[in-house]
Length: 248
Ligand SMILES: [Zn+2]
Image 1 (cartoon, protein in one colour):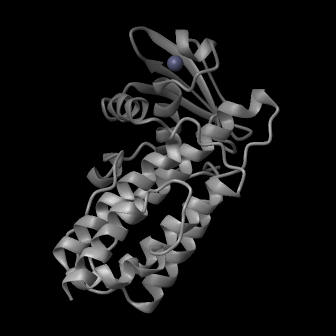
Image 2: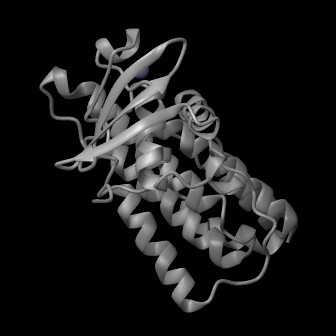
Image 3: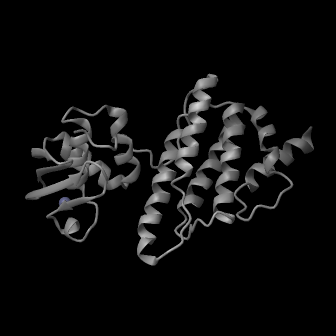
């Protein structure tokens, strides 16, 4: 049986440092004696010493490891390395899959997306937004809730970093910014750790960059103007819009 989750799940749901260490263990062949039974993978992972590790093939993060962190219920690099082995079936990883998008990066693409590509992007944005769940308690669910926010933001970063620099993308990203604002202001998302706010800040910086590359993009900031948003993320974009209007 193959796991029900995929490589992207592992990547987006794991912190950067743990993911990179796990890739390193996996690539150096430190995941040994891999067995699968009843949808559970087990192995011996060679860390500072050999650890017996098991991970569920159904629910990522349902793991056991004998190491210090694992015993305390923290997702450790050994468990992630075994999960990688399970989804890769022991095969080498592609370079782009090892790369972790911890920040939005501007893509080099300029050409427009086809209608199908655009539809696919919109779908994956909507899917990622579902990870930005409201927090309703009880408090023991707090960390899982914040992990989910982080996963959603990581997924959005990967999508945004792949968008071409053009007006259509800017329209899409302005809408996304407004959706993020809505999630926080009325959607019950508790962002006291600033996870979603951090993403919004990166998104605004990217939009400024897009506008500098192609000033026609500034038109797309109009929906942000003349409204009072709670978080003020949009202010730099509104200023760009106003300045250009004053000149014109
Ligand atoms: Zn461990």
